[in-house]
Image 1 (cartoon, rainbow, N blue to C red):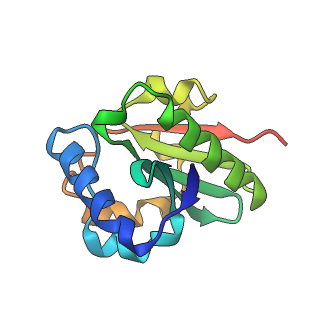
Image 2 (image 1 turned 90 degrees about the horizontal axis):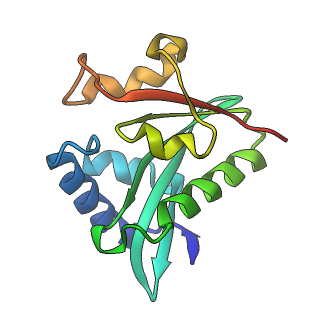
Length: 151
């Protein structure tokens, strides 16, 4: 089942992002930032348990980011990540977003959704506001990708 996140999901989101961050699979996010962006998160739930999640963060009138996409390890290889990305793309369409981007360590996964690799310099400066507090700033090693939404 797909649903929007609620406050009780924050602990598992934080724990999962921190674990994958410790394994250098993604950049973790501070707990305070997760509470600030709770409305951005979509949850995939199986039998009442969070199995995966992702966030759609709006950046500009026609630009949003898919971020913090993760599937708990015990649910890997079940297509949950793809279901979440599809849901986030549909959500972006409802808001008339024309361009989605992501910063990722998994570019091959996002290519199946027609994301293409771009130089980070092609992204607007506004998106870098969260990067200032990142542990990897200014040496970002994520791949920037863009998806043009077809209507």
